Image 1 (cartoon, rainbow, N blue to C red):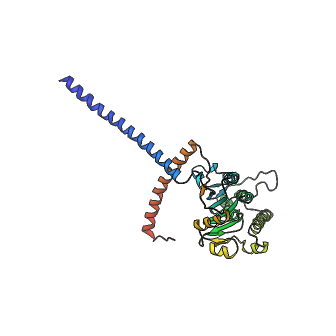
Image 2: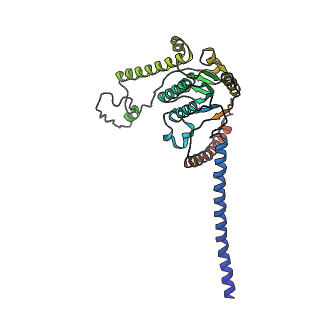
Length: 322
């Protein structure tokens, strides 16, 4: 009787252990399938090179920065000038590539990084076309203007020729909370632009001079790239953005349209059928895995967050879409 009872107890203990093993195996299989599916979707999204194409397609998406390494999770949404210039030069050296198309969807960013990419486009010995999608403003337009031909949708947002260097000033907050900013500098202007104090009149004048000088470089580049008079660009270099059709009337854009128009232009230039070869930043195995996990984790969080926002919007006011 006792032996039968002990065997029954032993069997009952083994059942939970077996279920734990089964659950662990299922979890591992689920994780592996998740990684494989994500990797497949990663490649399907276009992060590869079609070796048969004769026209390089290089994307410039998001804020333009010198390097994307400091953006971590969001590095895929930053246009790195170091990577993009490398891809442009790589495409230019490739004898099978007849033209280079830069697909721009960027509000601009670093003036230096924008100029680096623009100079790389100008230096290319191939036919170059800038294709502005939803937005190509400020540094994004600086780059576009350096191409042989600029194409934009009639509703694309472009232009915004100007320079900005605004910052938050916490001087009043610090004063209101009885916090003192101890200024210790070796050099009169070493802490110019510090957010913990107000600018002096002389500092503001110096800062504005630098911004005006950079704006002058921007205007000179656009005028030279687009074959416009400097005075013409001066009039429209107010920082205001223009829709694609307005930009065409102002001489900032050559053609209105999208992918089909870009293909037609390239075909006419190179004299053969156009097949795009996408040039993307190279990523190693661990970089790929990092990208997969960061993307999926972000999208999970984004999905939860967007669901909450949509629910709140539905309860408060109707959505406005365009």
